[in-house]
Amino acid sequence: MAQADHFYVTTPIYYVTAKPHLGSLYSTLLADVAARWQKIQGKKTFFLTGTDEHGQKIAQAAQQAGKDPQSFVDHFIPAYQKVWREYDIAYDYFMRTTEYEHVRAVQKWITQLLESGDIYKSFYTGWYCTPCETYVTEKDEQVQGEAHLCPSCGRTTQLVSEEAYFFKLSAYQDKLLAFYEQHPHFITPKERLNEVISFVKAGLKDLSISRTTVSWGIPFPGDEKHTVYVWADALNNYITAIGWGQPGRQAVFDAWWPASLQIMGKDIVRFHAVYWPAFLMAIGLPLPKKLLVHGWIKVGDQKMSKSLGNAIDPQVLYEQYGADAVRYYLMRHLAITQDSSFSVADLEQAIGSELANDLGNLLNRTLTLAEKNGMMQVAADQLLDGPTLALRDECWTMIDEYAQHMNDSLFHLALARLWRFINQTNSYFHAREPWKLAKNDKKAFEQTIFATCQSLYTIALLLWPVMPKKMEQLLVSLGVTWQLPHNYLEHLQSDRWSHHFMLHKSETLFAKPEPKEKEAAAAPAAHEPSYITIDDFAKVELVVGTVTECQLVEKSEKLYRLQVDFGPLGKRQILSGVRQSYGVDELVGKQGIFVLNLKPRMMAGFESQGMFLFAKDETGKAIMTTVSSNVPNGTKVT
Ligand code: ME8
Image 1 (cartoon, rainbow, N blue to C red):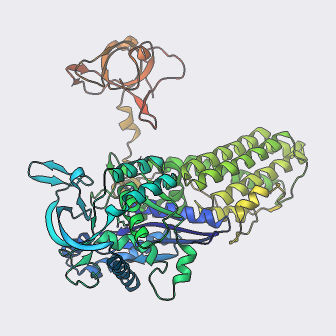
Image 2 (spheres, protein in one colour; image 1 turned 180 degrees about the horizontal axis):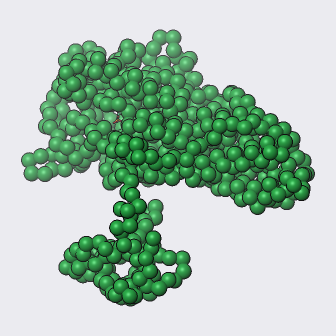
Image 3 (tube, rainbow, N blue to C red; image 1 turned 180 degrees about the vertical axis):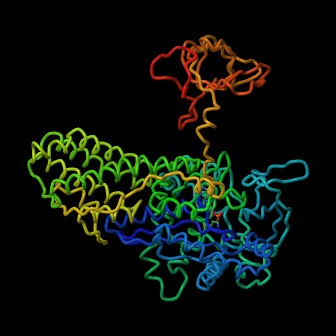
């Protein structure tokens, strides 16, 4: 059983058919943040990532590239390792499933299960999806005319019949169900666990785990015609990487297994929550403590993926914005358990407003003011006044709430909570007007600088897992030496605000992104927004109007037919698809913002002569745009 102060975290191992994209970075970054979070609690961590290098998919891609599979995969590895280095992904081992130790250990796993009777030989006929490397079960089959489509990627599957070795998955159905029941927190988020339970309850068939049709794979022990099914090969990397089945490595394996956290996208949860636990049960090993299943990064409405060709290159973002800003954006603005759209505009907004303004400026103002008033040495103040005590209380409450979210791997919530505190510190700083205190109340001035430094110190330590380089830079400007191993969390939780700081002016922590003509030109590669000029914007006629009538449109479930008064510009009929969000009575009498020079178009049999503007909240509810106090109808929005 793993040692109590050990934390073992894994990412999926990626198919090496292309360079890493933002989706692969996202999973890997989650693991890095999780590991660093444990590190600042003094734990020993082992962080595993790597590449999945066997199987039909790789063999086909290699063939298309005119290469043999091994040199094809070898060629991509430096690209992965380079991106991980640039983003400060501090993995401990980079697993490649073509490495000798892994191959031998997988063969040992098979041999052991052949002996125990958990693997047996028979025949398999079924529809096989090559891009997903999986058979499509009858239940999931989607038939369109002659074609059988893969429920996961939508592509055509092939009917394959082959002699195969089977893993007795059906024998583990009850054991798996009992395990899920005893471990209700096995999967985050909970909905995913419920899906897995329903899948298992619907009945598990034995799983074909060898192929005679695929030559690029681990040779099946004792039967050279077969290779090991790529998922039986790949999943085992989580134990072979830490020494399972290898001479002399048992003690290392025992120190780390079971894994503390296994991270993956929702596309491969079934492999990790059903097959993988059953594989482990079959060799008598304990199961991982937790699976963290994240949503997809989307581009527009589509999942971003190598095969769809809409992948965003992390390298381009790194070069433009730097590692820590991108790390922060991905951790804060993609809600881990849901699908989220990536947008460069949002990324720039977050850098400008949250990193440069909220955090960077707070540090900068503090340092500048302290320097101007000859206070580069900040001594702890024991006699805190009311507002400072209140800030200190906020700080302590925040630490516990932040830690709770981080322990639950809900990093986006942790960061949102921390930012509330950053804003409280900003409010404290501004309300005290230290630039005035410096002249008339030296004591209160010093206390303000001290309290702000103490807040910044706490913020930097807690944010280190997300932005390691920038937070180390921040700590240097406070005169603090960063040193691991150290239980910084425990230190913060028992800290009585008793630090002394030696301030140093440093480079600006975060620069606001400035969209330049040249950068905008590079936009398509990084899926950046295409900027419009002020003249383009001036072409859009945005006008305030009042809704006077609202009627249902019979032919549609979504549309309302609105009559809108634009004062001197007259009345217009405007169709709006917000029936799920607003009742008929809720719009009448309201002032909103409309686009008036949109070309009229027919919608469900009615002409729409403009567009009502709405924003969608995180649940998809449309929220109408309006003006904060009434203005005459027909007023232009500029
Ligand atoms: O499935 N958004 O490899 P893979 C978020 N080799 N995450 C994404 C993503 C997106 N748009 N696209 C990919 C495999 N990912 C197998 C895994 S593990 C034993 C074997 C991430 O290269 C996400 O973690 O297709 C997803 O599960 C993984 O990449 C799939 O990577």
